[in-house]
Length: 155
Image 1 (cartoon, rainbow, N blue to C red):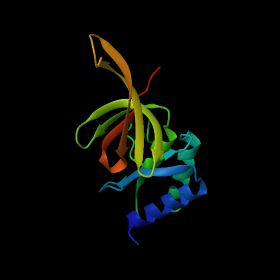
Image 2: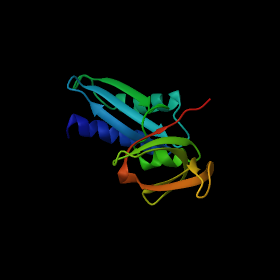
Image 3: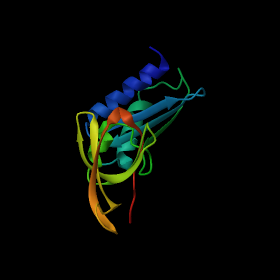
Image 4: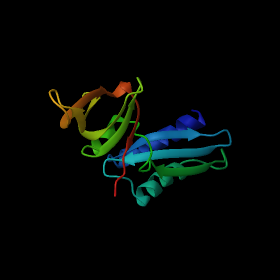
């Protein structure tokens, strides 16, 4: 078993212990720096990062392979990468860019069968006469058509 396979196995073991956590990304640099990015259905605490780190670190032998380890949460400004992240952000505003380069700033209303439903209000010219009216818009975007999506943080 390669070092990377062993690390992946240990990450899965750590995440199996807490089903509310899930892996976003992990990498191992040429100098054996292990970087693990996790997220959770209800967020990630410092203790979650410590627990995952301990499972990995205590099951690898530094005599066999020297390494450094960093376990972190995805962060509030990181792009959404997995469908599970969209579920936890229902009701929040997203900035979505599709692979066709369409940009949409809208509220995530629903996640279903590999697609998301966005709703927003837009000002459009009246069909008759001068002026504008506010209309409700909706877009259903397949998950594989999303180039990038970020949660908009508002205070």
